[in-house]
Length: 259
Ligand code: NAD
Image (cartoon, rainbow, N blue to C red; front, side, top):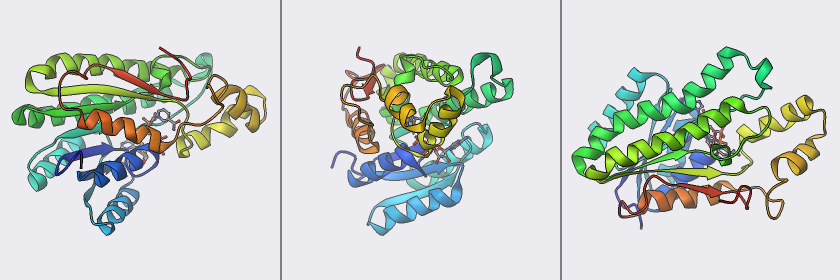
């Protein structure tokens, strides 16, 4: 088991990609914290893990609420004594052309992705530094490297996470703390399912064409990336044993955006 007794906090783990990362980390022996805005769904995921014989807890956390983030992390440390892995994964999508992007929506999206990553990192680092080890993982996107129409706020936020990971890598190195970014292509989760009809409407094309001609057009094989694909990369970053792998971003996307 690659994460035996490691305390792993995954934000946004009540659904989609975060939930699968929680399942894989649990399979590898981790003690899993499901931190999500949606407490009922977080509790359901934690119960699912406990039912399968794993150790898990759910905490209510709005990642942009500093007091709630700090209290949540403090509760985890009180219960389990340490924090080994943070996956800053909670995120949303809002699409508009730049000229019509409501400022409130722009600020909301940037805040959840960037302020959320900052606040959770800030709260976890002292515990990782004290232990002399830790892994911080940010959920970026191919949109950390590349742009798409209608996604200016998301593209800006996801590019920003690469900067944060590089800064945390430099500061964390002397404490044995690594930071990396996962950059998935399109994955069929509620976040993406919501976008398909929205993009069809905005672009004036069919939902089938949104999938084929927009979402998967530049993949090597026309396939969606899966939650399992992303979770395996999250496991690599969480379990890698040294600072040799830090400050990096790994694209997992069926070849959409090759670097
Ligand atoms: P999802 O909608 O299935 O899950 C997102 C989770 O985040 C939900 O459980 C939601 O309750 C939670 N959340 C939202 N706002 C929150 C907040 N303020 N505080 C705490 N929790 C909050 O979405 P997903 O597709 O699994 O996305 C997870 C991450 O992966 C996001 O950062 C997203 O940008 C990124 N991503 C997704 C895809 C994709 O194609 N699905 C591709 C690349 C990157």
